[in-house]
Length: 630
Image (cartoon, rainbow, N blue to C red):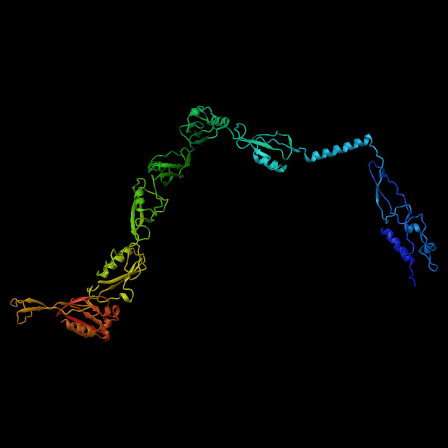
C-alpha cells in the first residue's frame, strides 16, 4: 500500500526552501518547472562601456512539449491536490512569475551595450577631482611645512630642540668649519645655510657655522696704560674684546684710586701685542681703610724679614715649608693674601717658604751594587746612605728594602737605610773544615749568621750525634762529625754551600779518647835529691803524667774508682743525704738527675749527667766523689 503524503507539510517545506534560496524539489509525481522570465534592464545596464551579466536559465523541460503520463486511476496527483486546495496561493508560495528564479541554475552572459560619451561638464568634474587628489598627495606627502628659524647668535642646543620638535630626519643637521667673528661670541651660531622663514621638509639638509669668537692672533694697538684710568682700561678691553687681559685692584698709599700701579706682559712686548696676549694690570684702590694692614710682597725674600714685618703689623704668621728647585732655601715662594690686599690687624698671613732642592728617593729595591753605587754618586742624590747586610735568597749585593718610601722627597743629607743581600750563608769551603774544631766555634758562627737574617740551628740532634769518645779527636769538645739538613745537601753528605736560611746543623762532640793509655813515667836524673821528691835506689825521680777524666769515666761509681786506681789518682768518697742534696741548689735543680758529683783539684765540679767535659788530673792528686741515691 502506497504511503500517504502530508500536503501541508510538503507545502510548508517548499515555501521555506524558496525563502532561503534552496532548490528543493517536491517529492511528488509532478515536477515544479519555473516559467521563463525576461531579465529587466536596470539603470546600471545603461552606463557607457558597462557589460552586465545576463542569467540564462538552463532548460530543463521544453514547455512547448506536452508531457504525457498515464495517471493512476486510484490516486490523486499533487496538482489535483493543489487545485482542490482553495486556501493555497500559488503566487505567494512560488513568487511573482515575472521575477527571476534564484534557485535555478544560471549562467552569466555578457551583453554588449552601445557606448555613450561624457558631456563637457562631466569631463570637467573628473578633471577637478583628479587635480584635487594630486594636490592632496603633494600637500601631505611632499610639500614643505617646517618654517626655518633664525638661529644666529644661539647655541646648538636650540637647534637640537627645534629639530626634535619638528621630527627632522637624523643626519640632516650639520656644522661647517668654525670661523672667527667679532660680533658673535665663541661657540654660538654665526650663520646658517637655509635663510630664516624658508619652509623646508624634515629631510632638508641644514648646515650651521659656529663662531670661534674674536681672532686671538689679530694685532691690537697698545695704548699708554700707565696714564689711563681703570674705567678707560675697561672700555679698551671691551671694545677690542681682549681675551687674556685681567685687571685687579689693591690698596696703595702712594697711587691714587683708579690709577695704574703696574702692568705685566707675558711672553710679548707692546709692539707685538695681540688680542690673545696675556696682560695683567694692577690698579689702585687708594689707601686702605683705618685698622687695615696693606700686605706687602715678600716673594723671593727672606722669611725672617717677612716674619718680622708681620709681627710689627700685629699679624699672625702661618709658615708652610716645601721643596723648590728654583727658590733657594729660606726664601718665600708665595704668600696669601697677595701684595696689595688688606688684612685686619690680628689676621693671618701665610708664607710658603722654600726648603731648597729636595731629593726624590726612587724605588731602590732590586738595585744591584753597581746600580746603587751609580745612584749615590750622582750629586743630585745628596742623601746619607747607610747599608745593612743580611742573608737573603736575593743576589748578593742587591737591595732588598729601604727605610724611606719610594717617591718621597727628603732634605739633603737625610739618612737613607738600605738592606742589602749577602745571599745565603756558606758553612764550609772543604768537607772537613769543621772537624776537630771546638763545637763552641760552630755555635758562634751560627749566632753570627743568624744576627744577619738567617735562622740556622746547630746542636746534637738525633741518636747518631750524641757525644762520644774519639781517638782521632781526643780533646773533649772537639767536633767528631757534622751534617746538615734542610739545606742544599742530603743529611750525611756534609754541608755543601750555600745553606738555606733555615738549615739545621747536627754535630757530634768528643768526650775524650776512646782508648785510655797507661801513663808512661818520665825518668829524670837525680841530682843529689836536692829539693825533695821521691827517690829510688838508682838515684832517679819518677813523675807520672796526667789522666783525662770525661763523662764516660764518672758514669758510675765503680768505673770512676777503677780509673783512679789505674792512674794513681787519689780519691775520697762521701755519701750525701737528702737534706744536703736539697741544700745544694746546683745539684738538686740543675743536675737533679745526677747521682755522682766530682770535685777536681782545680776546684771545678762535674756531674755524671753531663754530656761533655774533660778534666786533666795528675798522678797523686786527690779528687772528692760525692754520691746521692746510690
